[in-house]
Image (cartoon, rainbow, N blue to C red):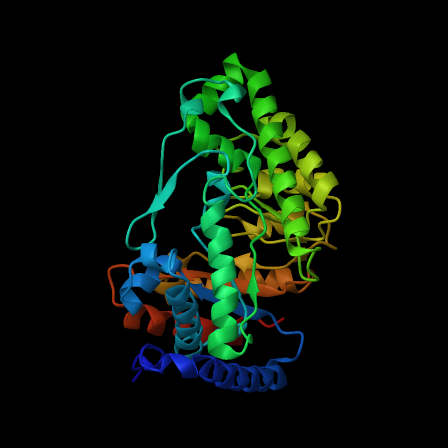
Length: 387
């Protein structure tokens, strides 16, 4: 019978890095055994714990986590250890971490306040551009002083010092990249209803505002490189635009308004990955055309990946096929068998690198039961999907 391993909650802080190293070594050994059984080219199963699951599990307020560098370092390591102690997916946990002051720090540089409740759920403030379509209401950001940037710089420096003081600098702390897409920011600042009204009444403003957002994103990423003294070897640019999703935008709106601004971003950054939580089928070929260096797609849990497979070039890799966390935890045996067979059908003729089994969090069942069900899902999937 499964018993939740809570060792991560009680390991002395000084021993956390060594404990994580031990778990990483054990996970590598387990994955080698899977490789021997299923082959080194097997489809990997990846999962995460949703960030909003962590405050209750570990007993902290997310606002403290986002402002206290010591707490952020400690809880990040404890989360990694807890994950490896309890989840049977294939992904290991890296020994590095990214400095965080929130999920939507990038939006704050445009003058929008974003706060969080104790569990980490974001609350978006008001911006005057919601009431008036006027770009003069926006002020060009300063990389050091705008929005949450002072907090982010402080967090980054303090985490680096803590890594050195506590663990001899072994925890590599990175500075985030701006990945938010322009439509996400437009809709959050202006409002979706206003976006729809702008389509009919003020299309020129849409083009101008989206271009402004893109230009500021590009400048932010360039200033990041200057701040760090050069791009890092693992830097890769992506666009995360969850509002690129039928029925919120149509393929025609995408072609007319979104494609031009994506071309600008791609020309400056060379996009290698695109994410939307929605169905990317209506936009897939347009995305592959505008982001010419993108050779992989990652259909999420709301995307019909079999239909996507039928309409795009077979040489495009599925870097990940997403599964919604509710499906992972609550689907029936028959539903799971059907999905596993669909994955296997696609993998017979297209490279599928991994399955992303949703960000796990407690629903109306306990975290223990959530993990039990997720592990059962992982075990069944691992056996079923190998081509």
